[in-house]
Amino acid sequence: MQDSATRKTRRFPALVVAALMGATAVGALSQGAVAPAIAAPAVMQTDYADLVARVAPAVVLIEVTKSGGMQPAVSGNLPQGTPFDDFFKRFGMPGMPGMPEAPEGHGISGVGTGFIIDADGNIVTNAHVVDGADEVSVTLSDGRKVDAKVIGADPATDIALIRIDEKNLPHVDFGKSESLRVGEAVIAIGSPFGLGNTVTSGIVSALGRDINAGPFDNYIQTDAAINRGNSGGPLFNANGEVVGINTAIFSPTGGSVGIGFAVPADTAQRVVADLQGDGKVERGWLGVHIQPVSEDIAAALGLDKAEGVLITEVTKDTPAAKAGLARGDIVTEVNGKAVADPRELTRAIATATPGEEVSLNLLRGGNPTEMKVTLGTRPADPA
Image (cartoon, rainbow, N blue to C red; front, top):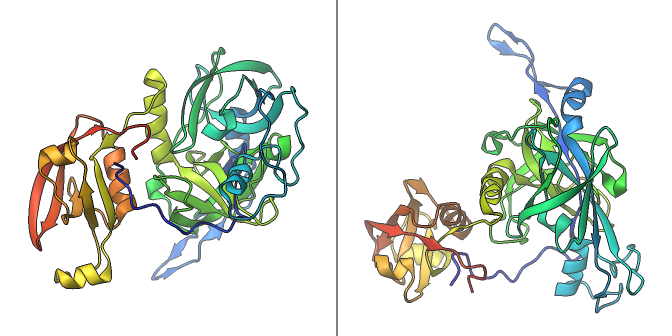
């Protein structure tokens, strides 16, 4: 069973979360001088020329060709809110309003963005950019077009790693997304609608967004303009470090309305490290059903706050069952770090290594206790 909250019935309006197929972003803040006892207001940097000149060579255009043998089973006139509507709006496939229909037997082409992370040709992009691709090519900043190989992809976080057979390439580094603050300036560089080397700027609008795209949602929201073709592109901070990977937009039109979402660099960096090993991502697993602690449950147990994660079921022959976890336990901390809701517990367990022993602080019958659990490997389909 899966270590996540019961499937939510709410979803973003069907207009909505559209995958971008490419992008990147960058920005900068500089502090004003501090006079005695009076701090001057922060001034936002408006000239990104030096920063862009330094990082842009590592941003690439990705083109993919997919087999046209299987055609969409639905037309472009999709009822809003259906699973097919969400699917086509997310992946931008033929059948979506405004997208071309692919003739029978012809390949489907798409574009996205990526960024080079080392001199040996490893490139990060979105999983949905290369999903199902028969051919992947990369256009470098100097105009060279080279074939790429998909090393691995993780649909759960929408991160993929591809590689080209080139050396001594310009590259960029990951920054610490956990240190981002709302209001911090960022910039994006990408290939919206196939237009490469496009730079936009904005700020971090919000952190920790859950857009119901997957079990590990923890998106950075930004108002830097990103559009279709921007998927997989980097979101840069003022130091030229990648703090996010642009992945989706909220839009009633399919174009940017100033609400975009990026996978945090801290998440992406862990996934990429796993993909570099064997092309796969292994995650820790407990084997429980969980839900938020409601106000009623908190009141019944005499808790001051409705925090923590309630275990509603423990599956047999799982790490949780072997460790002695039980229905009704409330998980409050993992390895000493508080977990306030099911998303936080899911991420804390999933980012741990299978076989690792973790310490869980629990409330059992209202009494605090601590248990050690040796994690298993999360199944591809936890359900």
